[in-house]
Length: 150
Image (cartoon, rainbow, N blue to C red):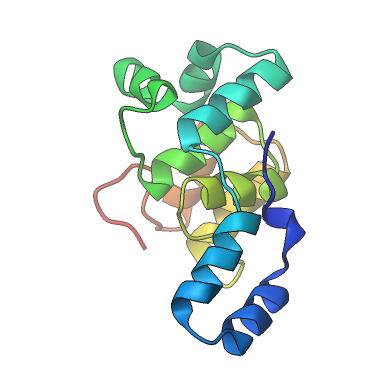
């Protein structure tokens, strides 16, 4: 996959920002070095590299079929929860999920946030999205895809 974001660390980016004469110079320099693919491109490449069909990911993610296919076509921008469901659909670990969230332009999982910690625990231990929902429910946390989120 074409992720050049590893070329710069966050610390390097801060240093570049603070040493730039203006924001435009910084943005030009960063844009040249940090390129994230679009989400649909990224998840389609994941399917290809893992030899898995989108329909399988969608089913494992417990995402409604037509909505899931629109995600793979790039005609929908998913919520953070839907991206997390996709991570379960792909059988990702926490590090892979953090990259997926980054590509989708959503906040990373944080271990200090109880709901995020539960989700990360489930991902890291190879649990299914249904297992994660049960853990969330048992801990009085909003379910993935629920109306109210933390």
